[in-house]
Length: 435
Image 1 (tube, helix red, strand yellow):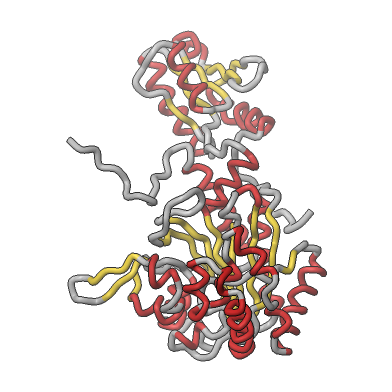
Image 2: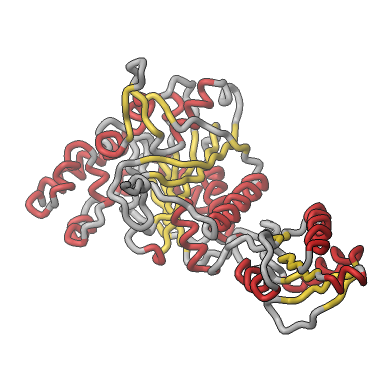
């Protein structure tokens, strides 16, 4: 019989890897609570017109990458390729933005039919944050701070911030003219993708990763030289906010976004540890999107952070993120097995992670399983310990002495040892954004 495998580009997350994801999700929830952002949960399926209208019909996402199909009623539906549009649609539909300013965040899978490679999958996961209703650069800076704090709490180093401004739509339209004229003058040097983008979305040429295109791109007109006065003031305000907070950044004049709804501020957090797929987090302003989707004119900004890439950085930065048990219960004899069930449940009630040995086995085989579990300690209970009303707590990760402990003192003794060893528990996220 043929073995059925997962769809290409849609990966299983297996035990041993899931724990890093849980750690990341816990940190995200705590950090967003610290900034008073509220979670929103939006559908995976949306009407296709939602993305065509907002992202742009001539973007690669809409033209080539979306998973789109007609349902039984003949409606065209699409698996969401990103989260901002669905978040804004939900806010408009339910009146969340009516005479209100809101901070929202979401977490979940997205879908794009791209060529699978490291850091880029057809089903991928994003954490997104959106601040709706604020016009000033201070909220742009706040969003940048939230992402920076997530990196800091996870002890991820080497992630750098790049910023730019796309200006107003009118200023960008004028810049398009200069950009098209420039690239037309060097048409013979453009690759096939750039030729396709030249008339439809010339800004995307600036984002080309083709090494042979870089000299042409470096000499192209710079958008910041063509910004309108208001956009320039806004961008300078953002720079001042970052400077005052001590957050280092680099102005990248070639930084653009592939979605049509962006205006003014754009930013990315990038890491050289990820190779070609260096962007970990990307976002900016989308001041016209709420109006595009039927709401009142409302300023807004946000970003999305790729969880697969962040989990990889966690692995590179800190190694194993498995959620290991505090202790592994080893028993010898039927009476000990029954008593161990009660003791283990009592310890779990008090907040300990306890893995019980199931299926019997010799003392040697059980100790081997305990070691493989990653637990810091083994709790041994045999016939002799039963007679004395004690267990033996044996360290598995150090040369410390084994200790006999009365049944009613197990939690106290184990708690002291776990605390001394710092066994894998998720700690507080209350750390500064910067050193």
